Length: 308
Ligand SMILES: Nc1ncnc2c1ncn2[C@@H]1O[C@H](COP(=O)(O)OP(=O)(O)O)[C@@H](O)[C@H]1O
Ligand SMILES: [Mg+2]
Image 1: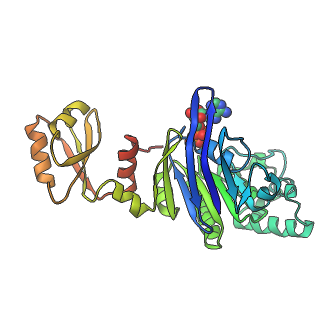
Image 2: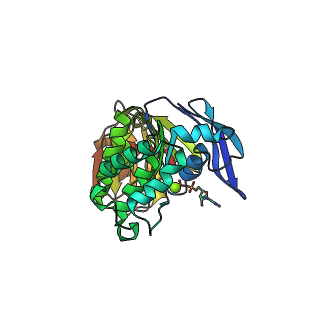
């Protein structure tokens, strides 16, 4: 349904998007997971036809978004990261303004607006100027605007950024519902739990590239099958790495006072690992053991943790 071929975009000497290709089949909920600056917004802007790529092609349901923008926009909904709301207008007026860009028959547009005001929980506040809305209400209205023409394909750019937990839950529930109704969804997030909870498949993104794509289970295997051991103590990154050199472990990350490694379950256990560290002069003040997860994969691929 969404086909992206070798997208590339530079800003001056910075390659913000560096050769991204992907295919999202109809009905899939696909997530881009990556830290700030990874290139998520730039990629989504090119997929939606707002930003011209330096190289590459995008088609939605076999419609090229750059050469046939009008046809593409009819089936495509975009929920941008930056709110596109008129503060002095009411929620209903905002929906009417944005919705009228889609050439829907009036009664159809009105019915859609009523439906979406209800779905995002703003029915009772529809007449108030948006300037009186909380951050969460604005995000929900922003979502409704992107969905008001009931698009078959929806692109959402960090739809839950900077809002309270309840508004976040409401938005995630709506994304789940439209996915269940058969909408093809591509959304971006820097929240690992969000990607984990929602997506059929996830692309882990950093520095303008996709590092790995798969379901949560497929991705978790990238970190290995063994447990993940995190050790704290007064050591340096270099000391941690040196102590484990030549051992049957995979160091996922090492930093001042904290190191993480995965074990190959057939070859080394936790006790042996701690012994090796101790022999290597590493003083341990705390240890935690986890199963492989999206978090450990992210750590392995990017060398850093994904934190807000
Ligand atoms: N209009 C722009 N001009 C210059 N640099 C930009 C512009 N938009 C984004 N960038 C840079 O491109 C990189 C990717 O940005 P972006 O796509 O916004 O990442 P993300 O959405 O993952 O946070 C960042 O380094 C950002 O600073
Ligand atoms: Mg962004």
